[in-house]
Image (cartoon, rainbow, N blue to C red; front, side):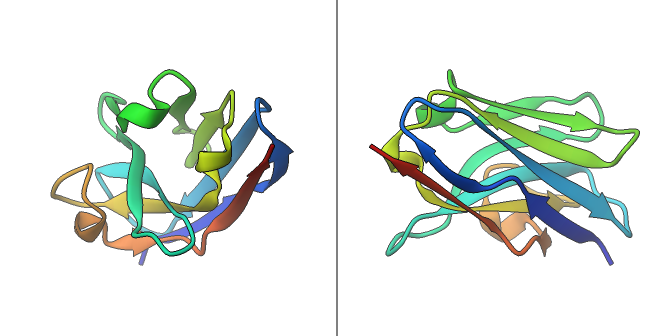
Length: 121
């Protein structure tokens, strides 16, 4: 059973940076991703990365500001978030996928508990 634990959320001001971490253990998967859910909205894709080759994918709204990466030696995935905006405020979830679309929440089998990011003006 894959276990995922996020950390690194917090309250920041618009324009600031924040780095989220996701520590993975307990199983095998082919990709990992970050999703977020703002109050009253559906969970949405943010970024994902393949385990083999480290191919990365981003939603358009974060493409020039966020960077997803992995430290395979530590089994940790990161999301470096720069130039944060108020609309980035959400609970951010780490997830792992065995097979399926790297952009679709429903295809990810394992999820972390989430970490809150609040961006104030």
